[in-house]
Amino acid sequence: MAEFFSVQDISISLGGRQILDHVSFSVDAPGHVIGLLGPNGSGKTTLLRALCGELPHDGHVFLEDTELAGLRPKELAKRVSYIPQQSGISISMSVLDVVLMGFYSKLGLLSQPSADMKAAALRALATIGMADLAERDYLTLSGGEKQLVILARTLVEDTKLLLFDEPDSSLDLGNKYRMVRMISELVHGRQNSAEADFSIQSQLSENFAMRNADADHSGKTALICLHDPVLALACCDMLMLLKDGRLICRLWPKMDSVKDMEKAFSEIYGPVRLVEISDPEMQDKTRLVLLPII
Amino acid sequence: MAILTLAMTFLVIAFVSALTTGKYPISLADLRAGDPMAVRTFTVLRLPRALMGLIGGFGLGIAGFVYQTVFRNPLASPDIIGVSSGASAGAAFAILFVSAASPSTTVFAFLGGLLAVCLSLGLTALSPVKENSSIVLAGIAVHALAQTFLMVLKLMADPEKQLASIEYWIMGSLAGVTASKIPVPVVIILVTSAVIFLLHRHVLALSVREDEARMLGVSVQRTRFFILFLATLTVAAAVSVTGLISFIGLLAPHTARLLTGHNKQSSCLLSGIIGSVLLLAADVLAKSLAAVELPVSIFTSLLGAPFLIYLILSERRH
Image 1 (tube, each protein chain N blue to C red):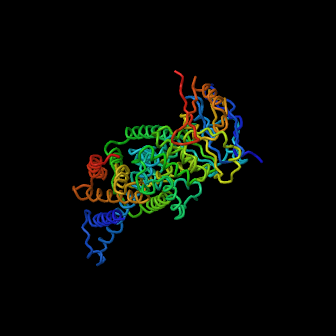
Image 2 (tube, each protein chain N blue to C red):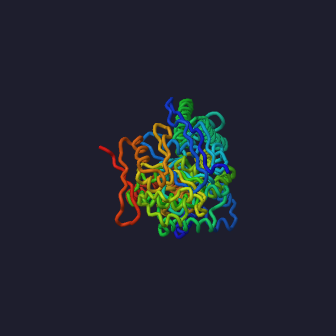
Image 3 (cartoon, rainbow over the protein chains, first blue to last red):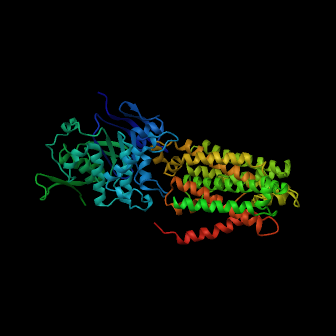
């Protein structure tokens, strides 16, 4: 079977400087949360913007055998969602209207969102726990609430590939984890993530390949740019480490050894220690903590 | 809904006052009796003038709503892409070289406005950076060009007659409106406003930052070009008959948003209605306060500015 999502030789140079240097990776099947980690200026956001066609680039991006470059905006929007660090909504509109924008690619020129679409939008708001805020002005929400509303919009867009640009950047600790938990639920399906509590686990016994064979994922894959490696270890199935525009390492947090991951992180963040600690509250589970060596 | 009803009530009052005020007193009884002078004044002058106030104000209000939303700027107005100055230059050109008679002024003002818009949007299409900022920059360039052209025309104008006509046109007035002048502009404004109203969802989508809008499936450049073209066509049609009318396009959308809350479809409609009320009321004052007709822009600003100040002072911060 062909790959579900494949990125081949993406290169970008701006003003003579190589921002991305032949980045390639692929996933065979949907149902993955892929984390993109790297120091500032490593090209994370650039890669994300290239994948969604915002930046001209060399190389190819395929999603289910369709090359994304050259798709019309509506066709692209039916397949890919891009969730920016902060949404660029700057005039007041109701939260419901913001979520309904997720249906844009499915509506004809003169048609209006149907009653079903409105119901779906309200359901999406209920999913993120904001059903009672549908009529509120989006601009009056807090940063965390805004991000969640954009996540609700992503829910109604119902696309196969979700690109998140640092969803944790403007959120406090609680909202950060809430956000990634929802992303994980979206990708893995509810069943799986009900058990996952986002404590950092290194349950090597959990066979990653086996879980992929599970049918209860959603058919989606998310690619998330993250700043916080601990958060990334908690929520991602696969991590890609970028440095100076090159993909230097791929990690599978649930399978790779702590030592290997520590080595990889040290390469991009400078010397760090990855420490496994047991959580007295949760038996059989250990957490990973990343400590810089000062 | 209550707000729309209230606005409609004001609109009816303003429209009736516009019909009943004027130099030549007309009573309902005269009209019923078929007094030829009264009927003629009513059908050729009074009614067209009131209709133009109604429809023109509506168009300016809706267009203002579109500009402010698409440019995400509360100060955006038709002049941001040079339409008003283009229309002024067109009108001045007609006054100088064609004839000071009104139909040609209207036609040339419309063409001038249209030319300015095509230039601004065309320049943006040629530029490698196709963002809002480049439309604004192109608009500033076109505005400056049109202003220069206007200045040259003013220098060439005979100061006694032509210069006065140009200045008077720029100050805006509904005084010259007659039945023969309004059908084309009114039809244009009604059609463009209706399409804008139906495309409200797209106008709103354009208010989102461009990369995000594109990823939602919006063909940003095409949609923006089309919607701005519609809005500008509306403005060009209105000012070609009335001359420049300040403030309505700026004030009406703000008021509508403050009254309805968000940028809903009803805010767009209300913005049009408020535009109508404002222009009709300003025209009633312009024709009744002094022995001579006064420029209507004086009153749109005079009514509008204090109201805007009030809104600014009473606005609750988020």
